[in-house]
Length: 190
Ligand code: AMP
Image 1 (cartoon, protein in one colour):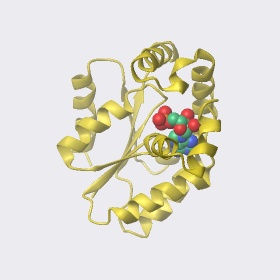
Image 2: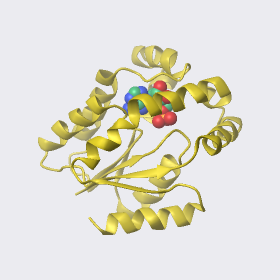
Image 3: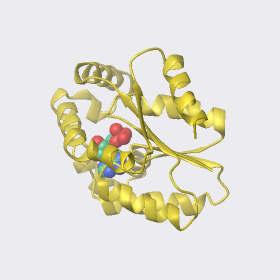
């Protein structure tokens, strides 16, 4: 089973690369951001609560996203593997994910981090906001808050996987295909 954590700040290209990886490897894509936006569009109570935090660029509580991932793992028991995109975003989420996967005997194969500098991220997110209409991409203040949340709470997750010798970082600036080739090279080493 291939279980990949695609890591990096908002706007690093995780969603774009996930699409190419699921096509090539037949994996299930688990993006907690997409799952939350789906709850919002369905108008669920969970979605309404999450939206208040997401609109300000703050993380939603660990228990909420861990519950969503647990549900999706159970619902895809025959999967060849998973790409985790935007999850885990805290060390507590990473610990919970290890426990969920231990019960399935299918540990994380590795984490691949896409490195992109803050100026480039801000420009990419503002452009995406114009194209997609995502409210949290439209406002520079919210974008900076999301990058700060990433640096404060999410960046330490890299250390969690480094301690398990499962961390690789690659340059996230370049053409989509160049970056995809670099990720594929890492996957080939598993
Ligand atoms: P994303 O689509 O990954 O950029 O996520 C959009 C927003 O959803 C984030 O700014 C958070 O508010 C929320 N979110 C997504 N994934 C998580 C997570 N794993 N933990 C906490 N909040 C999350």
